[in-house]
Length: 423
Ligand SMILES: *Cc1c(COP(=O)(O)O)cnc(C)c1O
Image (cartoon, rainbow, N blue to C red; front, side, top):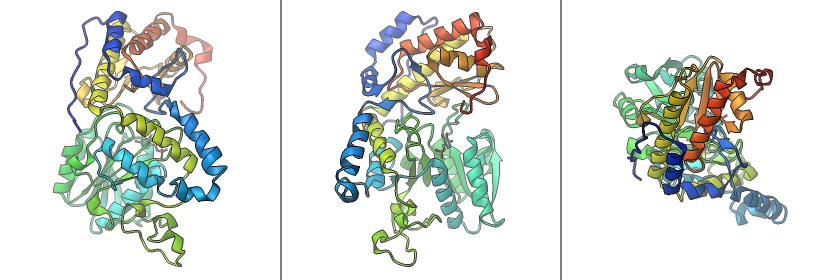
């Protein structure tokens, strides 16, 4: 897999015509036909819930009416339900730089993080600190607190911000567990450098790929990562709440044990032995029966990704985000937006955030105008750019609607002030 992506130069004053030309020349543009998106909607939230692959409806129908409705229990063997976590993990592997047998699809990101952090704590019995990023998506840090609490005081959590992480690693560090692309700012951590730094101190490196898997090239093995976790419902288009994934490097399998010792991780689940015996490989990271309906749909998203060149996805992603920043700063100048993502495309994932004191009503007004992004408290409007179904003219149109909302003060209307539970 190529990690280097070419750069596309954005003109000083890009117009809609330039965007249309770019769309016509874009080799990824036809991929959009594989997704079902409502007419007229500009969907800039694939970093939170990816769009639906057209193949998903038919796949769901087959699983429900045929595999479940007709074949019933036989489907555990005949439809490959038993092996699904492993088979999907092998399909995902090339997208994250893993080898076959190193990735498995199961449970949620939060649960998988609990498993790998606990395994890491057991692998470094004479060490006492887990290092995480304080401003990370909170569940990661909550889970680390729980892992530490389960050690009755042996292990504690140390929270650092991006530039402090490398220096915080020392001979007491169990592991660094960092999210590759920051959920709010989109900042990309240097996976190779932080992993090397951790290893030099005898610590382990655990990566959360929620905002990078499917959005940009990831090469876990080239970076020598120990463990990784991530979502399939964001850039991988697996469907709402679809099971997450877990990566364990070959060298740790059979050595690293996760503590949620359910029958699915037993060496012989159908021998129904009275005591737990760990499966010697990757399956030990499983707990119990997987949700087949939801997991089956993960494949429809993976199949689309496997047709696309990840370097091309990255090149387009950098161009779309560069274009968006350029247009917002040019056309919404004076309206109070401050870029809250790295300006350099190479340091940014596939998303752009702006800080604005009135971010919440502005995002509501944008959503009402058919541009779907999201809001992250206290003041961040966040836009995700999925190169498989977002084009250059979409970026132009999204900014054009934002310009109207700001110029005409549409966001000030009372209906845009109310707070929903999910933002
Ligand atoms: C989206 C996301 C999660 C989601 O965790 P769930 O267990 O699926 O709810 C966790 N961590 C990060 C960094 C995320 O971006």
